[in-house]
Length: 236
Length: 254
Image 1 (tube, rainbow over the protein chains, first blue to last red):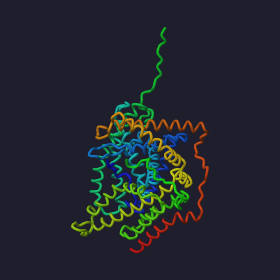
Image 2 (cartoon, each protein chain N blue to C red):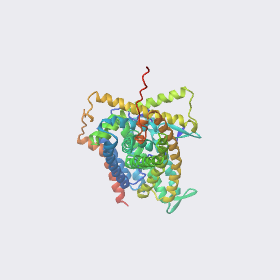
Image 3 (cartoon, chains in turn orange, green):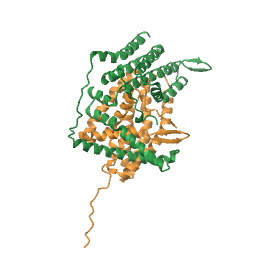
Image 4 (spheres, chains in turn cyan, orange):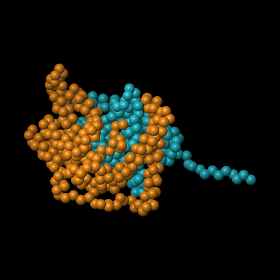
């Protein structure tokens, strides 16, 4: 089985040095803002182990191969899934750590492209996925069943938008002059397909989590029926 | 499996590179690759020389080639892109055998392959000589914000535990006659992913409670501070200085 690796881990040399440094600085700013936001809204200093285990989960979930057919398989990127499950700022932090560990300990994704990858996967994909999911959730009826559907929409949109962001960075500091409209067309077309797979997997995974532990799903906060304590009448 | 925690790159050893303090190696790695990326794309000979330097660094670690070579497979999607690049790029065209390709695209494709391979080899050199735990210590020493250091430390500590859980789930599925062959397997695999999230999260809750009961204050204590001598820094930054020199010289030459 050949894993169909997708363009998620930009390697070294794809973007020139000034662009790499700029994206690194921008990524550092985003991570700084996420630290502040996560501390304020999503995590407290007690819950670092939880964020760590969520990062491990994202890393492990990317290793589950989903067969596509003809001997190929794809895997989850997990940005939108993480955003829906634990909130966008925590998801940014978790994906940043996952990408850094992959770059430094597994030589997967360029070291100088770490900033680029954090911007694309950890910021654009996470926030687009989260905002789309929130928007869809506002339109759907307030039922637990709406949450997986909203998460799937977020996942569907997040992948091609991240690909489009990559095209934007390539336009700024790409290695060779490629007609940008063609590059954008090819990247978006291909990543819409990946996004459909991502949406289906995200829908199924979030469905199973909402069924078992809806209280763990960040996007479900305030949308679950209040738990009421029912005490049966004593039998006389 | 693309990359798995079962395939940790780190190999114990007693070479010079193993002995360098991890934060020196980390800074040296980033600076070296940044220098390589800064070399102009048309300076292919310079890039080839830096690739040779990276190969030399990998050889210096004394790990078997079969341990390192599979890692180069991470480049495959970009190698495909590099092969396509000369045909789709614009600009003056040159004949390459029977076909005509874009000059700029060809130059960029060769540079991309050289830079990408150099980057992977440099990262492999770091990964095989540095324990995951030491990466976390290096990040802490380099003043990365505490929450990120904590997330990274939990990640390297529990990645094998969660991967084992994933493996047990796979064995459980297989022993019940499941085999993932087509899209019809997706609901099962995705439900497994959901279960993995719940189990990871609950493990996080248990770990947190166990830490609190042992006096967790919210900060990782530094038990053995990292130290580096000027000689360590010189050694660790030598490849980076060479790459920076090459980048400056190649830029000046144009």
